[in-house]
Image 1 (cartoon, rainbow, N blue to C red):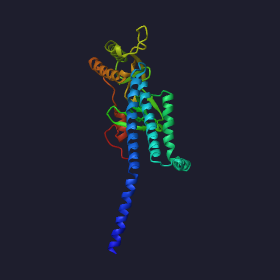
Image 2 (cartoon, one colour):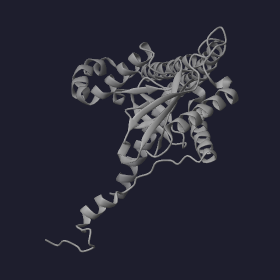
Image 3 (tube, helix red, strand yellow):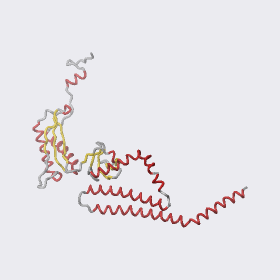
Image 4 (cartoon, rainbow, N blue to C red):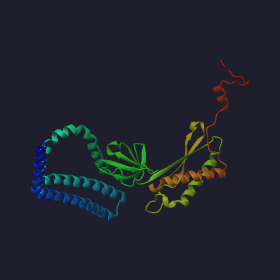
Length: 309
């Protein structure tokens, strides 16, 4: 019995060797073709990167828009190369894709519901590009939740780098509202509250001095017209609120600035306001508690006794 079993396995081994010998060249050729396809795919990926970079490196117009088109084109061509490579490999190994294509309708129906978000992401990405909502390099705020610099705008998602360094991947279909800080010009709006007891004329003059200092020190960061004059010089907008949270009077200063210097000038405004107020002896408003209100809240009468009734 043992000899019969051994003869059986020897026969199977010999059949396997005969098959390998007979089909060695065939298998080797298929593997060689597959290697060539992988190599060509690798070269195409590198070539498309080089060509796209050379095309957009010559762009002297809108750099942010050029970078956006660059990332979108790289993303789209990568998908095309991968799909062509997979189909070519299937053809090399003589895998009939006709049944796969015939069943695509059934598979597509099964996966349709799951692919809805993917289709929405791609369509939304095209509309973002078509409507020119933002570019790579723009500082934006998405859905009043995430703010940062756009690093990539792809077919399916947008990546944003927050100021702290965190990177957010947001599906295009999830982008509902966009606040873009890199379009045209921006207006810095800085408010400061002072107590009711302060001399309002003194406050106004001090803020006016702050605006003049900003104009003199940072004229290169303000938006100018073709004749060299400012679109809107830093100025005291006026009293914009009274009795704000029962603290005092609110003054507001404004300036039309270049988007790249928006945050810097807001910080400069606040620093100069604090320094000039300290020099002029002007106090900043803060919450105050009225004595009569406090007594009423705690049930304390004028005589000092507490009303427990």
